[in-house]
Length: 255
Image 1 (cartoon, rainbow, N blue to C red):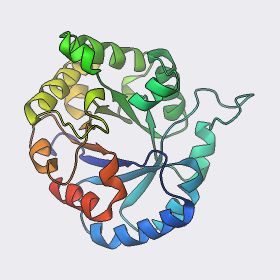
Image 2 (tube, rainbow, N blue to C red; image 1 turned 60 degrees about the horizontal axis):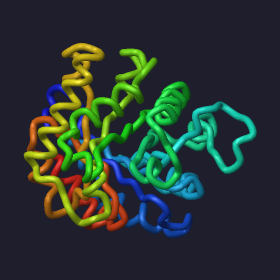
Image 3 (cartoon, rainbow, N blue to C red; image 1 turned 135 degrees about the vertical axis):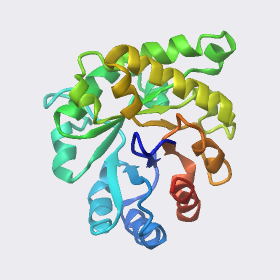
Image 4 (cartoon, rainbow, N blue to C red; image 1 turned 180 degrees about the vertical axis):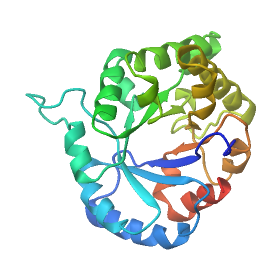
C-alpha cells in the first residue's frame, strides 16, 4: 500500500449470507472492535434485504455500507433488480459490480458490467469493479489480456472525474472460495498491470491515485503480507468478512 498516494479500503462481500437480525447483531459486535482504526476505509457490502439494518446499526461508527450489485437501468420492467437510486436512498455508499460469481452464475458480461458501473457512478455511489482471470486463462498465459480487457470495457465512457469514485478489485477466479490464494508476488504483479492499464487510459496521475484491492481469499493469516505490496491498496474480503474477529485482524493489518 502507498497511503500517501491513495486510500486503503478493506471491504467485505457477504454474498448470500445473514438475515437482517443477524446483520444487526454482527454490526454491534464488529463496531467496537474496529473503532478508532482509521488507517483505512472499512466497508461491508451486504444483501439488499440487510441494507436497512446495516445502515442503522453502523450510524456513528467508522463502518460504511455497500451493496452487492446494481442494475444498469434507472427503472423499468426488470423484475427482481435494484436500481442505483434505490440503493442511494437506502443509505448505501458503495456497490460491487462484475464479481466473478455474477459473471459465472448470472450471465454477466464485460458490457453489462460497464452498464452497471456507470449506473452506480450516476447515482453517487463508489463502485468496486471486479476483474480477474480463470485458472484456464492463467495456465494459458493470458492473465494480463483478460484483466486488461475487463478493465477497459468496464470503464468505457467513464470520465476521469468519475474514475475517482472507482475502486478496482483484482479477483483471480481460481482463488475465490477455494482456499487457494495467489502469492503476494502474483497478486502484486497483476495489480501493477491493472495500474498500468489505468495509466494508458487516464494517465499516470490517475493510475497512482486509484485504489486497487486484492480479492482472492484474503484472510486473517495472509492479509499482512498481501497488504505490504506496493500496488495492493486493500482487500475485497469474502468468508472472513462474516467473522468479526477475522475481519478485525484484516482491518488492523491495513493500519
